Length: 561
Image (cartoon, rainbow, N blue to C red; front, side, top):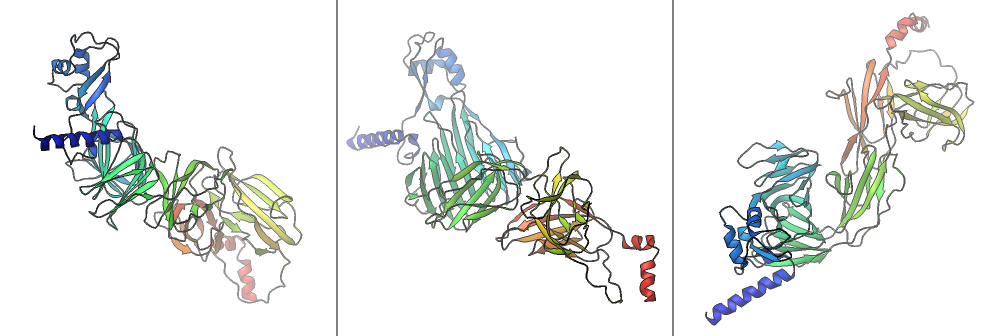
């Protein structure tokens, strides 16, 4: 062998040893030189034989005698327990593996290899290599692979499953996915064995790991790829160079350029997690500002595993409005976004309780800060489809420490106090009770003033109030707007009123009589539309019916005057 060839051989062995020393196997330096075939090592157990082990691990067509010769075993029927048996990776039985959808929120589709028609993705579906997954806006899904590793595919992303293989009975997997656009969050199970690998490629990079938590972004708008390492270490490379990023570092690659130098990620912001259940919405979640943060990403999930995102938003301020998600326990995490667009470490509130149902109805009358002249005023509200009855309270103070009336179970949509009230300022509130007896949160204190009757009006033409209706609901944050719909049917397929308002109330004129359904949606200052509130029901009385019942006397009186 020539000195030159000998030197190249030594160099290759040295590079291979270095790659093993940093626990990533021979994946980094494969383009530089061909490394010797790696072995998978098996520790012999009592009663193991070469014959049995060959049938369990070797590919069909490879005789057990080759394994015996390779390990220089004298007696194939008697292997000493504790002995290390070396099996070339190329001899191991390789089988296709599948990824399972363990959670999905919103609309996601999958296109199978050899087909053009995309299918909706649902929880529990299994996908093999060659599948392409696409998530739409406000959608996400989590895939679990053969070794328990998981990938959270976030909204507006496209992920291809390039290779899903498992070395039978060894625990080693070969997982390779391709992020064409969008962003993913990977939690990779620590791997053992030289052949195990987990690669995420983008149009410009490949991120290779053997057990870590990291994020990969393929930004189609800027033609950048970003890798953010939360724990462990990740090799980020392309055909120009490789960069090793450890926990707390991120790498940005522009187009087809070489990966940039690792940069420090922003630390986790300081959060104040709610210690009592949230029962008033919209709810404003806040955190402390981070030096160097241009934006913040806020994510909400149904558990601290963040298997599917119920909310995923980027905000400029140190606050975010959390929509009404329904009763239950949720997790929220926040991270800063730096000037380089790299996102920092997460701060997480892992067990936030929401106890906000059944939702209170909308208010019909008295409206907040209105004037009332009837000493036994009628308190009216809409009928929530979540409620079977209502709890109503009247007080002389906004804290409701001095109750004047307390009716815990009112049926219908109105109530009157039992006795006349003296003139003055009062506060009332209403809550819904569901069919299990659970009482939801009360509305805010609704003030009104009971004033004396005005002087008798001078006779003139009567004013018609047929079908007039004013509705109000709790105000949100400054700058928020409200989307209101009224329809004849609770499915709102053809709303007859569809309006966006700057104030938390709507004043409707000349609605036709009968049953109406109403719902309200909050629109945040950045245009984000939250979920619809619960469907409410109200009735517009038939004025002609009332006139007929009265014999038309009132109208006749006006005519005589």
